[in-house]
Structures are given as structure tokens and as C-alpha cells.
Image 1 (cartoon, rainbow, N blue to C red):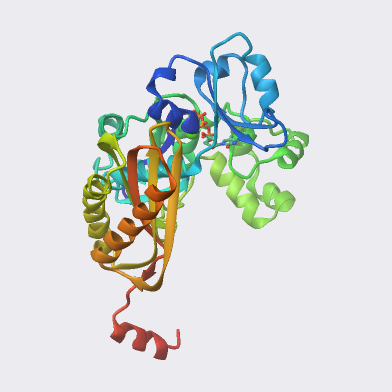
Image 2 (image 1 turned 60 degrees about the vertical axis):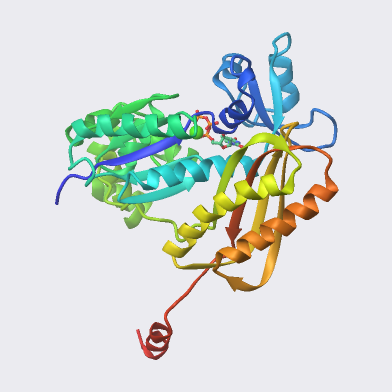
Length: 367
Ligand code: TTP
Ligand code: CA
């Protein structure tokens, strides 16, 4: 079998970078994104922060009041998490990735594996240029930076990616993989938590290199067959897991900036109709029906809002999207006095149309 070339892309300080994207003037300041519990003004925890804030020792999961204290005297800015907005940005980047890979496996809102073996003809030399090209394309279209790890499998791509951030690119060729892993502590492997680390330490295994040399039969005795074999293979840089789509996309959306801030319905609909054309093309390509239509808007004060409607019947036509987008905006403009700056349209709640013939055959099949 030909060498595989697998990439892991991980967006840099993602939620905080998204906030910088819509407020470019804060780029040189410490930026913290938090989940506010709402009890008191400062209660809650840090989701993430930009690298400037990290210099002040701000960390994910830290109480917000502590982050505030660490940043006292600086011109730090704090934001409340806005998942709707981060999802939109993530969707746009994943869509771009899709054009660069034979298969794409999205692991989280800010991480995805790309199988690019065919695109780079199995060459790790070509992979470097290819990775730069993807980075430049996303920078150009969405203006978000991310880190790429490249390796012969998902395991190596992931550890390569973690080894240099932000805006990093680390390439580990197949012949370098075992030596790359060897000095690292065992807990860098997926599935090796605190308990396993302690157990391995008792056995004299500290690094991945120690684990690689350890008798496989003995590992099976201690950890059971499946886990023992997995640890043995992983430590020896062997991982045959394919890059696999995680099922259907849950939604299809597009977002765009209006030429000027406005409350004019016709002006807004001109933009959303454009976005709808694009959504409709994708819905048709994938042969999907949708049950929900949503609108998304960012107002002049940069707050964002969404509104949705659930249809009585699944639909698949353009007019249904346009009609519902129109009535959602009509209603929304009646409720708000602010001007609109960016707009988005989303369809979700998918079902796939199956040809009747197929349904019948699968009904009678005994498999
Ligand atoms: P990460 O990829 O762990 O972190 P990051 O993208 O902020 O920073 P980097 O990759 O440059 O190290 O997490 C992705 C997003 O998940 C992050 O932007 C915010 C969210 N998150 C939380 O909400 N709480 C957490 O404890 C962590 C670790 C992440
Ligand atoms: Ca990240």
C-alpha cells in the first residue's frame, strides 16, 4: 500500500481569534473569551485567550476573576462565548478544507483531519507546499490562522500538530515517526490518562520509546488484548485508522457582510438571496431535504442574533428558503431598532431523499 499523507489542522486560540476577526482593533491587546455563569459580574471560567493574554499566565478553565487579576493594569478585553458565530467561521473553513482533501474528518469546532495522499501523490515534500497553500487560502478567504501537523497517520499528524503552535507547520515523514515519538512522555498518546501513566511508570515505562520496546505480550496481560495491542502499535507509530467523515453535516450555512449597515429589508434580502443560491446548490448536490430555516445577523454594536422557523414538511426548494428568510427578517426588524451589519442563512434538520426503488429493495433485504 502507498504511504498515506495525513494532516491535522487545529485553529489557533480559536474563540479568541474569532473575536479578533470581528474587532480587528483589539489584536494587540490581551483577549479573553469566557463562559459567564451570571451569578456575579465576574463569575465563570475562561474558555480560551489569545497568546498575548497567555503571556500573563491566563489559561483555559481558569476562573474569570483570576484571569482579571492576572491582567490587571493591561488593556485586556473580555468576551462572552458566542458559539453561533464560531460555528459559522468553522463551517466556512471546513468547507474550504473539503476542496483540498479526499476525505475530511472534523473532530471538533476547531480541528479536522485531511487525507491528502492523492493530492500530493504520497510525497511529504509536496505536502509542505500544499499545507502552505491551504493556510494561505484560508487566511485570504476567512482571515483565520491555524496550525498543521503532517504525518503518515492520524496519530503522528496530531502529535506533530501539538508540537509547534500557533501558525505552525510540522511535518514528520514515515521514517522519522518512531524517533519523533520516542522521547515524549506516554501521556501524549490518546487513551493514556493519569491511571495508565501511573501503572506504566510502575512497569518502568516513562516515554513512548520505553513503551515501544516493551514486550507486547506483557502489555496484553496487564491492559487486556485490545488496549495492549493498541499501546504497542501506537508507540511504534503504527495507526491504520482511516480519515472518516463523521456522518452528514448537521447544517449548511452561508454568511456575508452587507455593503453598508442598514434596516432596509429589500437591501438585506438581496444579500440573503445571494447566500441562498449557494446554500441551495449544496443542498441539491447532497440530495438533502431540510426541516429548519434560520437567519443570523450581526448588528452595528457587534451583538449577534439568530431566529429560526421549523417547517411542517421537509422541503428541498429554493423558494422555501427565500420565503422563510424573508418573513424571519420582517419579523426581526420589527423587534429591533439597531442596524444590521452582517447576515447569514442556515438550513438544518436534514433528511436524505431516497429513490423509491432503493427503499423497497432494502425493505426486502435480509442483511
Ligand atoms: P483548543 O484547541 O484546546 O485551544 P485554542 O484553540 O483556544 O488554542 P490553541 O489551539 O492555539 O492552543 O480549544 C479550542 C476551543 O475550545 C477554544 O478556542 C475554546 C474552547 N475551549 C473551552 O471552551 N474550554 C477549554 O477548557 C478548552 C481547552 C477549550
Ligand atoms: Ca485550537
